[in-house]
Amino acid sequence: MEIEEKFEELRKRGEGALMPHVYFGDPSPEFSFKLIHTLVESGADLLELGIPFSDPIADGPTFIAACERALSSGVTPPKCLEAIRELREEGLHLPILLTTYYNLIFSKGLEEFCEEAKKAGVQGLIVPDLPVEEAGELLRVTRKKGLHLILQVAPTTSQKRLERIVVEASGFLYLIGVEGVTGAREELASSTLELVGRVRGLTSLPLLVGFGISHPDHVRVLRRSGADGCVVGSAIARLYSERLEEPEKTLPAISRFVRSLKEATKE
Image (cartoon, rainbow, N blue to C red):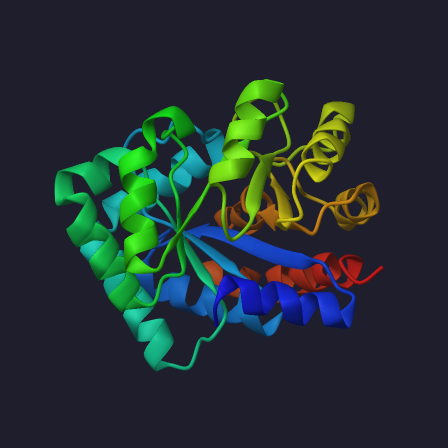
């Protein structure tokens, strides 16, 4: 399913989007498959699948540890793409966004990386360390290959840059809800809601807010502020990382948590 189809489907149902973010291979590829299926069965609308990276500068302690565990389990970019192919063969239809740092794309070659991602079943790329000012060539290649390059904005993004990002964006815009790195927070910052309002006034593209989302109330507040959905990652990783010796036993709790987030998108 394409990203546009998913948002149209949600719009007709009057629901917001829930996009869980997981780093593939943490703490093992076998667990990641079980986790992803649990997320989908519990209400995920889109999936953000991260390729573990040794220097994830956008991530806080929870995801840094997740990357380290995934890399230790032997996960590589080709194994992540192979996992997506397997998930598609198993019948997974929801849009998949592949998150990776630019060095991995550049070292592979933009054309080849995007071609392989598209063939694997990816609908878009999220590249946290690639500013719009340097994204021209990757924007060209992703459009050529039928992928979306999901652009990010933050509370610190100037109005001038925001207007440029909106012009280049497709699929949806990813709003970074905090001034900092990923990680669950207890409270939403007022700057997060202000950011939703600023961007909403410039574009009709769907707006997903990520970073710091850890509670159904966060989802409700963001929906009421004009956001089209939320991205939740560290709060999920925190649940299974508490029992790394038996992470499968945390799947029921993860399912309940994700269902509560999804229900909040309907209010």
